[in-house]
Length: 466
Image 1 (cartoon, rainbow, N blue to C red):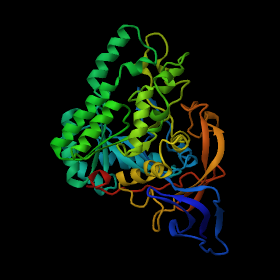
Image 2 (image 1 turned 90 degrees about the vertical axis):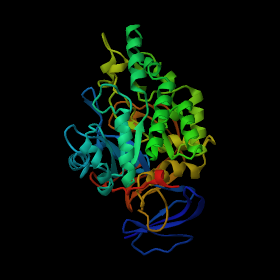
Image 3 (image 1 turned 120 degrees about the vertical axis):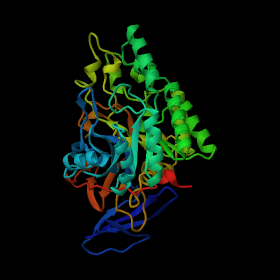
Image 4 (image 1 turned 60 degrees about the vertical axis):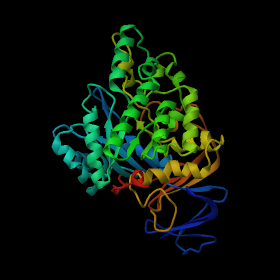
């Protein structure tokens, strides 16, 4: 049985037009006007609605631990589906004493296969840069993991990477088309500022931002750019938050260097005032890099509209407020003890549509590029992120007339709060298909646990294109 989605406005990264989409066997079979169908096919009338490619969220955390506390896992990936995202790419930290691929394969088998409710892939995070591990980097591409991340932040943590490791990774990754990503913050600057603030008794959540000002991010971004220049390799900077780091990326790109970056949905609508909320509520907004002031938000919207940044991810990280975020509350505790991260998996598209498209900051076609198309290209997913014949039938029928309020009460992320609590929502993913299977109907998840599949990425993604 096939599915015909008729009378909708189809939106791609290039254009939008009214038409029908016919899907069968998990693929898009035909696109056109007034397509026919078989008697037993399902017909979805998308009159007055938009048909978008399923979202690709290239930055999620389902295995992250912070001071012994772990986030929610793939058992909450139905939140992505309800939010119109059909493919997730998670960062998996290499286990000490184990290889990169060994770690990824073990995690995939135990925590994702048979559990995930949307399709998925993985980025490796190198934490143990022994010579034999560096030599393994090209093999990531062969195994379907063509991206690797290194943390420049978090001094003293096992996953912190120094310049030596980053340079070696860039050089080795270039050999096989592996895209190297960096979390760009100067760990030493943060360490000095954090200790100073705590000594002064400035321990509230707001001081998390004071301990990680824009210069911390800008310096690390510039340093990573120079390391990539020396290596002759492309560079991808994740979760860019401030004007200063953005300027470093723009200047490098204008010099002809292959430097790219993303930002995240929460950096576009939240700011430092949220960290200053009373009664420890500010802990809900502790993430790294830190939230910035309104002027930086404006610069980020301009950057994604003008293609200075080429993707918007969620950086989803599901810690509870009542127990986990409160590890930073009480005598002898500080903002440095609060687990970093924001649960934002479900509302990425809702934020981009309501506060981007509806406010004239980005077009619908630009939204599709940022939400779906470029993240697929960056990660070598050549059957995802686009509406065309032969692509996976990952499709979202989006109702622009829906009105609602974002809240933890109607969220599937499995945590006890939402950073977007009380935000107005205009429009919603009404129906979502994953490889032709309906997984969301009337805004409700109707799929099955384990329906998601591992999607191997191919090397030489968009960062390697001329």
